Image 1 (cartoon, protein in one colour):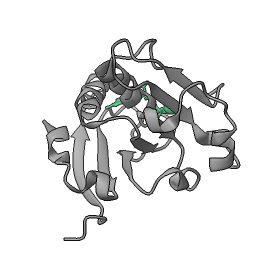
Image 2: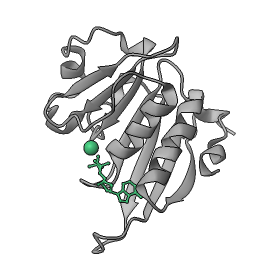
Image 3: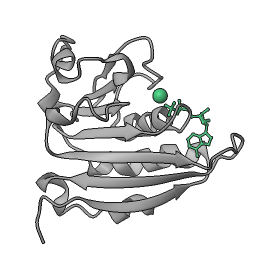
Amino acid sequence: HNPADPHSVELTVNAPEQMRELGHRLAKLLRAGDLVMLSGELGAGKTTLTRGLGEGLGVRGAVTSPTFVIARVHPSLGDGPPLVHVDAYRLGGGLDEMEDLDLDVSLPDSVVVVEWGEGKVEELTDERLQVRIHRAVGDTADEVRHLTVTGIGGRWAAVDLTVLGA
Ligand code: ADP
Ligand code: MG
């Protein structure tokens, strides 16, 4: 097959704690230079997943919603890559503004997770992991979330995404 072809897995998560555990498994697949784009409505669980990812990567500081800052850098507590957590919601200009953020880490040396990045940061790299989170329509108490995780580009072609469903 074409190594640039995207491939996907569908996952179901039943509670916030499971979303964090998914983040732990996802962290094991990630390395410096990776871009993860999270999409889903407000309250879908994007930040909860990123919190688990930060725990799995072993970075400093609790991951919280970056709503009032555009990006937050969480340095590694060990020798792994830092986590750069971006909320692109108000990032009008996309890539140019990302480069203007003046972060004290380089993005190629980091794991970059972007909430609300669709249509804005694709140009950062043609290789990315796209995570789409859906919740049952009309049931705000429901803790069930359906996820589609898609690997795009050669980086992800040989990665077995089914391990995320463990
Ligand atoms: P987002 O970043 O997408 O706006 P958050 O992660 O900040 O979402 O918030 C998700 C909210 O939904 C939290 O209050 C969390 O406790 C709740 N929640 C309920 N079920 C789940 C689930 N399965 N996964 C993640 N969060 C869930
Ligand atoms: Mg959020």
